[in-house]
Length: 243
Image (cartoon, rainbow, N blue to C red; front, side, top):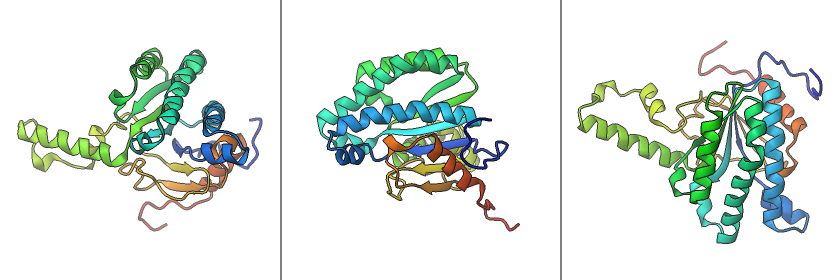
């Protein structure tokens, strides 16, 4: 395969890659540009990373696009992010569909602007039968909120006698989460130097590997992605056992 910057074993590429896309604003500031400029460049990075993930054989790619806490940002910035989401989907949908990418969302998208919801539903419907790569966009997503909602749903079903308390197990909880259509992440990447989860996939990352890089999201390219995967492949994943 062309364009391999590292000695990656293509038979051992992580099945599910989850990315906390951080640093758009800081990158823009370093260029003496407004934060919205950084977000626009960040969208271009999404395109590159989706293409490279599919090329390397990743089956699930989850991107932390907008958290439940991001509503605290200035309205101008939130509006810009929503507009970028709509423009990204409109511009990329045909190409994503052509390349076998299935689009999903995790989180409560009902709180998003109507135009965003419509474009997301259209994109999910058009790509629902694609199988090469599942692209999950975490929108108005928070790990704690997802777990809390799952607890409420299970409690209601117990109250309605649809399930028994003794039947509740980890597998059932996973099926109630909004991430139920993908496997747990093998590798979680966070850009821009921060080393925390920020309420991302709290249940699902129990045995994930983590990779932190100082590169801001707009400068995270194909080579940086391969570097993260190379690091992942050179770790000893024991899942609590002894080899």
